[in-house]
Image 1 (cartoon, rainbow, N blue to C red):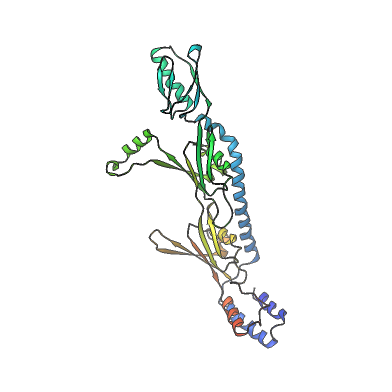
Image 2: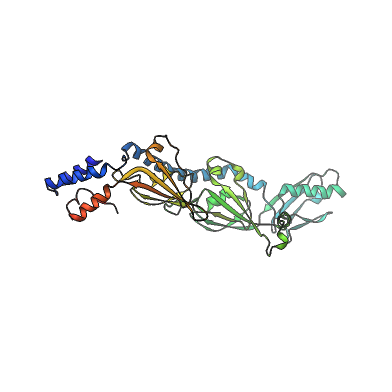
Length: 372
C-alpha cells in the first residue's frame, strides 16, 4: 500500500527528489502506527457479497410472480361471501328448490322453505353446511347441497408503502396477498432508502363477532374509551417468497390495507469508498454493509471496525471487531439493526497527506487524491 502511494508521488514528477525522500520518510513513520490494510482478496470477497445482495432482491420479485400461480386456488376456497354476491344454490334431487340468489345489504339470502339465512362472512363450504342443517332439521332427510359464487361483488383494496405502484386496486372475485402485490408492481428496490423490508402488514377491519371476542379477551376493555376496529396481520416475506410457505399467502378481503414497510437503515462511515446509508434487511451483516458502500478504502482503512448501536432509551453500545478475522472466519459476522452506525477505522495516512497538501499546495495533487 505504502509503496504504491510513494510510487505515485515519484512518478508524478511534481515533487523534487529531496522533498520526495522527506515525504516517503513521513509516510513510513505514520504507517508504522496503522493496522494492516485490506488486501485485494478481502476486497473481492466484500464486492462479491454486495453483488449477491443486489441479485437477491431481483430473485424475490421473480419468486413473487412464480408463487402467485401456485397458490391462487387457496383464495377461492377461503373466499367470504358478502353483500351483492350472486350465489347459485343447488339441492340434489330437489330441482324445485334450486335458486340463484343475490346477497342483500344485510348479508342475507332468502330460500324456499327455510326463509331468510345469514350468509355474510361465510365461505361457500360453510354456507353449504348451514343450509344442510336448516333443510335437514325440518324438511329433508340427509340433504346434499352445493353453493357456488356466480357473480362476485365489487371490492377495493389499498396497497401502500414500498411497492412500485401504490394505490387503490379493484378486486373481482377472491385474490391472495401475492396477487395484490404483483398487481402493485412488486416490491420496490430503487436503492438508498427506497427498498422494501422483510415483512408486509395486512390491516383488516374486524367484523362484529371478532370485536366481541376481542373485547372479552381484554380485561381492561370496560375502562377503555375506544374499541379496537382493526387488526394487523404480519407476514414474513422471506418465508413466503424464498421458502414457499404458501400458508402465509392469505386471502385478501374487501377493505384490506396492504402495507409494505420500507427497510430500516444503517450508516457506514470512516475508511470506506462511498460513506452512506444501507438498507437493513435480509439479515444484513457487517461485511455485507461494507460491501454495499464499495468496500473498505484500500489506502485508508484498517481492520478495526466499530458498530455503534442505540437502545430504546437512547443509550449507545459499541461493538468492536476485526474485519480481517471475520473474513477469515475466525470471528462471527455481526448482524446489523436499524439505525446502527458502522465506523471503519482509518489510518493516520490521510491526515499526513492532508497536512503535506496544505503546506505545499499542488505538490502532490497528481500523486493522491484526497476523498471528501
